Amino acid sequence: MNAILNPSAVPTVIGTPWEGGFYAGLISYKGDVYAQVVAPKSEGQLPGKHEWGKYGTEIPGAASFFDGFANTRAMAESGLVIAERVLELRIGGFDDWHIPARDQLELGYRGFKPTAEENWVYRNGDNPSSVPVGYPYTIRLPGQTDVELFRDGATEAFDDEWYWSSTQFSAYDAWTQSFDDGYQTYASKDTKGRVRAFRSIKI
Image 1 (cartoon, one colour):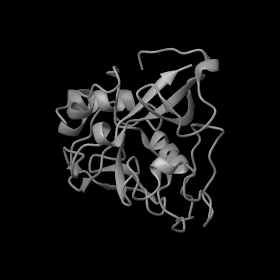
Image 2 (image 1 turned 60 degrees about the vertical axis):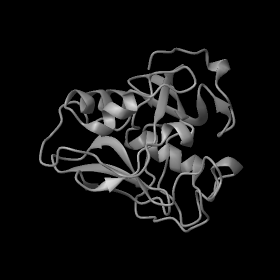
Image 3 (image 1 turned 45 degrees about the vertical axis):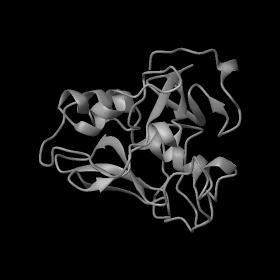
Image 4 (image 1 turned 90 degrees about the vertical axis):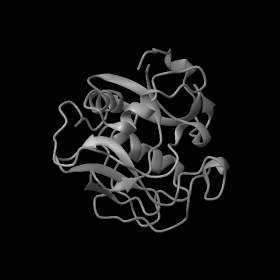
């Protein structure tokens, strides 16, 4: 989170190419607002699937629901490979890419849901950090994204499966977000899942 931008510079349309990736909406915490950017898939999604890492070990500083950069840095300092790899990314001239926190990743699903599948509705989508605040999904909302590049089969589409967040749930689990039906849960840290980088820019 190195940059600070004037609010007038922030796009108004989700999916606008911007700041090295694609505009994904706003997150608020500690009285400040941060614009979210999803990395281009070809450069910002780690190939294959990966363990979160260190099953049975609680990582200090990796429990934020909204600050993925702090989480990812804490993970890397503890030797977690996926965090080290994401922090090494240099995309569009920017070097502050990170694994999104739980609420950042939810915002990605809300704006870039790749398919028209029904949503899993039991409390999934509750996002107190987003601007505006996100409420639980309905079966049909959010629907398939209007951003053509992110629709199923297109070049930027999230895979129709679950992704890791950087938010630790316990010594044994971390939060995940499914991009098929929106299911928010946690998975064992030694399970393999997808990883896609975000940026978070203070405005």
